[in-house]
Length: 369
Image 1 (cartoon, helix red, strand yellow):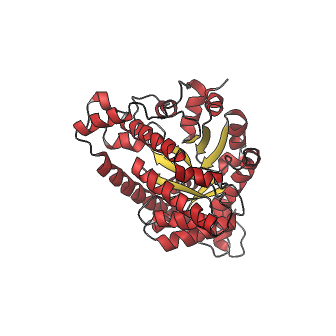
Image 2: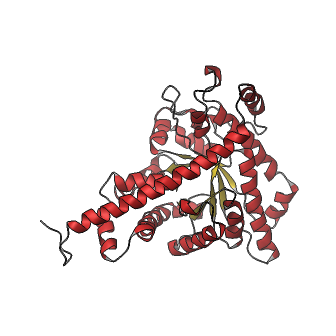
Image 3: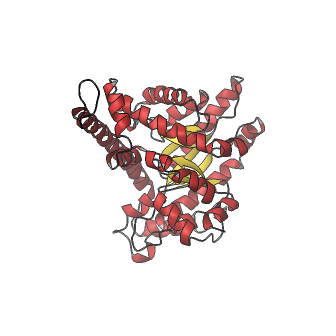
């Protein structure tokens, strides 16, 4: 039995952190579903930028949409919705079989809205309505402006993947926003069954401090932060507040491990996958990491519910001069800025491709020989 299937049998969902038109057209995504126990998919601006910039799968669609007068964000979201709608349909049987627990795909609102609560709420509702797929999450960052947008979007009945969370405190803020949205739905007599996941980014912690700590602490901070957060996740699900919502028909906001590809070439390529095996969670993996885990990974047991040695490890980082609270804020800001840069790069790439493809086309719309 492949390690991916073992992880699935443990109770953790394996999602692919990638989407390209090539994955869809080649049947590769369908094969991952059949053979590697992949049950969902996430995307972000960086993934789309790379996919559109480095392949020609999108060229015909870009040409046609540009000729129809589309450009910029409008053109991109048409491309993204085409891909993600097709991916959502592949996962739809899983979504149905699990009662909506699994089988999800995710599309992010424009990262330029990270500080715009009202704009995020509007964009989330619009994108979800356009997709017309029940298993599409809208990704909203757990920033200061994003937290109230998450509450309002959940209240509106739109499923949300909360992204760019870096700490226990970030997770708790996202979880409370989710619960407030559900509580308001119950008070208004609305169906409390609105799905959500909370995405904690892991590997970026270790990248941030790799040259600032002794070798004994290398590649341990992200896992310790995740373990601390996992305990908070369990505590929340055991709380009276959540039990009241569950009794009313609400479904838990699942904890998702994001950024789980190993960045350190001297560390195991399965480092974060093996360390973060846990029931009732999700691990969204880069394609390279998924294939590596399927080939030579191992399931070595589940995360301890109490977080294990998380606090002792984090105390060692404090003694080494690492302020995890300040670093969490820094990582969230940097993540927001990175996605905004990828977004601008993506818009520039689409504009450049649109112009280049237009130059190869006669005014009557026929391609030059």
